[in-house]
Image (tube, rainbow, N blue to C red):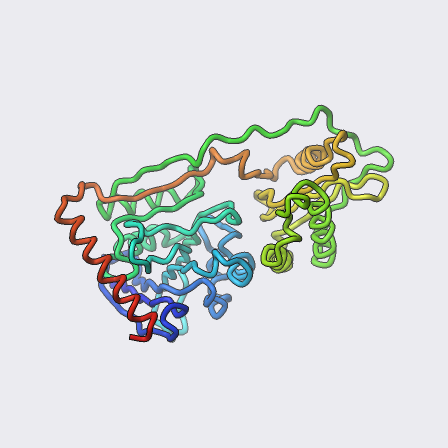
Length: 367
């Protein structure tokens, strides 16, 4: 039988609260769902990394090197929680992690009725990590959560999910099992990219330097940061280098991803001077264009688009995804009850929200 271990947020209560177990519908395998703050997941790094290698839809943005660095440095990630789907009980030698779904905590007085998957401007792909063999069972177990005080929702929302990705099928089948309707909405129209008038050939003085080793990436990140800060974002005070949290996260995240070869940084050099830089995240199958910068002094050469065009030409079988230009490939998946709620249901949910808020207030003050 699947179980839910519902843990309150330790940051709010000031102590480690006891778990609560309730029954949910049975799945393909016995599954226990644990709720844990993202910032407290360093202890399961090995199990998490193993799951990332078995995931139906691999997603580096929810792997330890990215997510834990974000939880350490970025305020928004410190409030995130994760749903952990375990096969086996705690202490069993063969216990395995089958799913990891980051989401927003539902521990306020007035909270959304749905369980909302975590989304943030730093996360370009919102696909949760689900074991390829048990993805549908994990989703079915999560959709059955109704008893926990901070998971008392009537639906589930995933954002920035690839519309043609492998997760859509298992989620649709699990929703049908639970009697939920599915709404799939594209994120929005893709932005038209700037097309360079001409791609400069690699003549004397113009070269590409690609950093792939950990030491080279570390040095190239500093060049990218300086190049960005010297342009319009620096003058506006919004450059990464001008925000201690952002720069701390970027340095930690790139160091971590460099260890697993999921990070590379390309520089376009003119007579030994960097005039454009592009940070790419991802494995061989595809890369996300994460951060770019170019020299204003050489704007007439269109250096950034020239760099990207040369990179794409050099690796035609390795797509480079720009989030804004690829927005139409991603969307929001919303699972909601098929039956409309009557006023009595709405009133009951309002009373429960008030009780939940009062309990949180007592816990915050040690009551």
